Length: 218
Image (cartoon, rainbow, N blue to C red; front, side, top):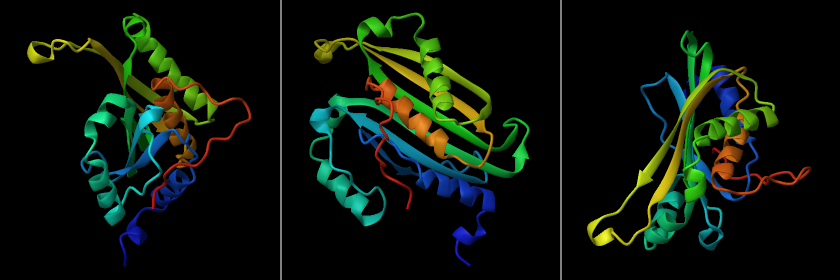
């Protein structure tokens, strides 16, 4: 009996729904190691948005191909670091016995971080705006949820000594979690991926334009 056959039916359905998610092509989305202590079953996705000058061709994110890709890209880490617009994590947790804290059998935990322009980073309403982006993204994608909560944090970075010439930067971090109303996780991943693009400063897609599928779970 293989490992997949031992997974709960509801979790298998959720995994299948994630594979069907269609995300914007500017987003580099792929599976990452999932936490093992938060729930009996979990899957995690990582996402990055880079400036167009460092955009790369779509690449596999698992197995030997992923290792080869990592080796190919190891020669220019500074380029990526300097041009990364936003990064994030999407984690789907499942406990067949349910959780009173979650108010359900599933829980989605997310994290997004992006560097902002100074004028926007100093806006006192930035935290509430970031939360509004999340709520609107879920509503726009028809992703029903409950028991949502989150924290928005602004991070000011200053450099000193030999790095004193670097300008100050302001980052925004949003950590949020919510309980999906069903095991269909597709609209939740699509909504979150749109949020990452919003944090990166990308304009929304025009009405009627369908986002291209991005990387999917194997």
